[in-house]
Length: 380
Image 1 (tube, one colour):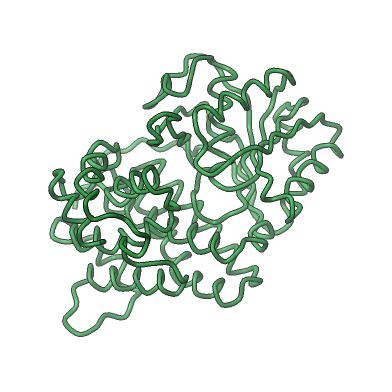
Image 2 (cartoon, one colour):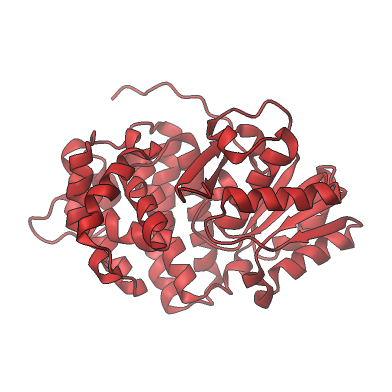
């Protein structure tokens, strides 16, 4: 099989291991930071992670200004308000501590703080013309892989649909992967972020933009994530399993950065916009049906299913889809849209909006609006 051409540049430095948050001040100084904006959310205060990050920065002699108003699915309005706060403090460095929302918000702030305008101006890729501030990403979940990507996902404050705003300059210079930070995750957060990471590994592995580098990261991510999710669900304090999940999530993020996703994410976003359904919950419901829909167009699911135990007569795609459903059930999340009171009558509108999502273009099987409706109906 001929290798497709590819262009791979590692996006950032990765510092991984238990206790590595303590190096935050040292690493920030190394990158020239003095006046640091710490972007986080108040929900993490009980775990003490923002306080520990602040202490590490202050112990290094740095000034720290905390923005902790980040919410799930940060909006363009929220980014604008946070940027105003950053300008008042005249920052020269950004640190994000939290889940994907905190990291996306931090990237959004970097866009507007350095290049002006609004988030809508940067929808797409490479539209920032001026240099950006150096930054560090510290994930407290094992799910989004945002610390490994050059995109900020920001919701339009009017339509509530997500805008993908990308630029290599906005990527975190350093990602700190400290699995101790994930020990405090509630069961729900562990569940929905893990399912999202698994979907990242699977979709990036089969999408049309895959290449030898992305495929290596996708497959490795799957082999870290799939066997370790049941372990952390049963034993949340298992640090080696937590670290494996965090590394798997990061590798899946690297895979996305060098490839793309597919219609699982295209279909999930409208559900969040209309019903406020948590992203990972929507992903877990949709992914098995997307796998079944795509199987006729790609043999690659067999690589992922190779480590699983098939039932006699099952195709690799069906084995994989069944495994995903089993994992979702293990987390206690729903497996049907109707369980979340999604109206069957809205499915055509959801299909229309899903067809307009950028990730749909890279699905291994070309899709029409009608195809997406079929997927929604199967998931309903």
